[in-house]
Image (cartoon, rainbow, N blue to C red; front, side):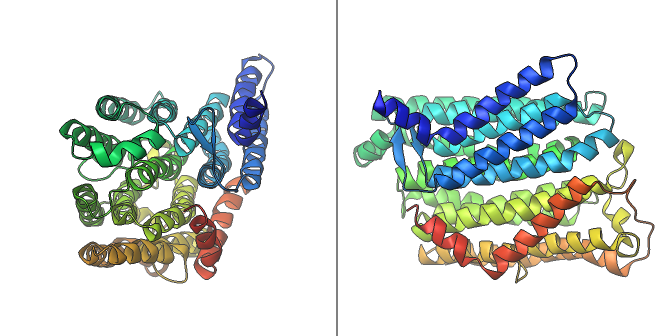
Length: 474
């Protein structure tokens, strides 16, 4: 009984957010409710969850009979997910009101998607990984198609759902093969039996199928086809949430399964992941150059950044794990901030989504232009912003893992990315145009993008604080 009580205490962030989601359903079910109440209670629940996670940044401990890990690694990712959800809440309200679709169900889905992400990061069993992925994915399928009257939104939702269902099939079949050869779905047991089953053909096929499923979730080449269309058709705050929170959750599982459990450093599997990383960096950056829609440009950029982070996973060393964890929190602020600006700029009927629509923004909205420039510089990896150190740590990990060629590919493709990121900055500051936002940005949205910009600068000036924290998890 004492063990069960301890399990509840150590998993209090997860239980708190789950209770918040259930409370939001009750609130929304009452006829007299208003969306404002759902929004407020959701923000409070997320904030409390984040505070509890900060208190649990302690050494990991096994809970619920070894099915989940609490503290440390999982709490760090919980903070990332909660920050992504809170920023999405702040960016969404005025956006949804402008689009005439501000409904409480939207915020409930964000909360439960976050619960799914937390399950993924805290999982110590492949069954929990599957449950977390499905809870997150189902919520995201609905959120992508939240604007039901728009054909593009419906098309994106159906495409994401169908391809996501295929990825789920790969994952389940992979788990079945791993279970059949190792005798367990528990990651601790699989880690112990890995030396004896690593040469088993069925085990290798199972692991390969899981690589396919997780690569789909992070939108890595060649499993990236869904990302540009889905990112373009989804509501812009949802796109930002998917590109940051969902990607962070998938990378949390990537690191747990392939680096911390299988420990495959120096084997063929890390070479496969390195090839996927290189292909993602090359294709994502090259195709982003040709995009004229800013959401599609950021979608291909997201594919490239998945490649950067996979470099750290492929390195399979402590530097790689620390680099990925640092990169994810930096990527959260710079990418969600960029999509926040896009959402502020976006008008009805998908106006102001062309890159050319940003021409002359600095004269019309100087603050928005300055913030967008910060996010573009950080995404390009320009110091002293957080994006620079994120790339530095994952490339350093690749070099230390004797994969210098992968770091060279990363540096060269980063130079390519500077073109399309800086092109937007040049348009805003050095081209004449009539760029403007449809209305005055809301206070909540401006708080979200300003905080994101400040934290990007903070991570660039003092990266050691986060790096020392994540190194303590190893």
